Image (cartoon, rainbow, N blue to C red; front, side, top):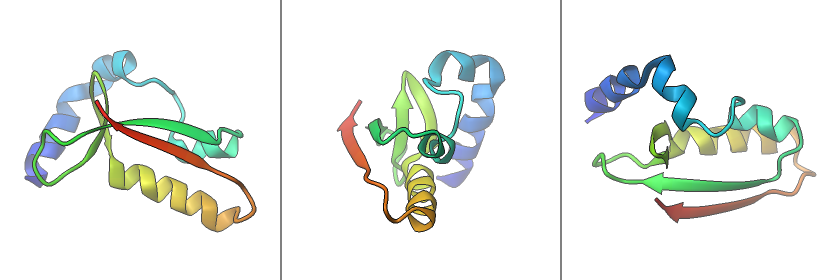
Length: 87
């Protein structure tokens, strides 16, 4: 349910995020800085939502794809690779 996702994200807070996020930049920023390969660990424990997950849920996969889509639309000549695997 959306309210569960929202509550979970709120619970992570800034203290927990610093231990589970592997990058300080969002995906769009990483693409701008030249990163072209992403290793996304996905998790489907919350029904109806696929999350990127590294120890804890970080962002919905749909949000990550939106960052990539926005970048590709602005930079159609760039090459990208994406690896997805279940965490």
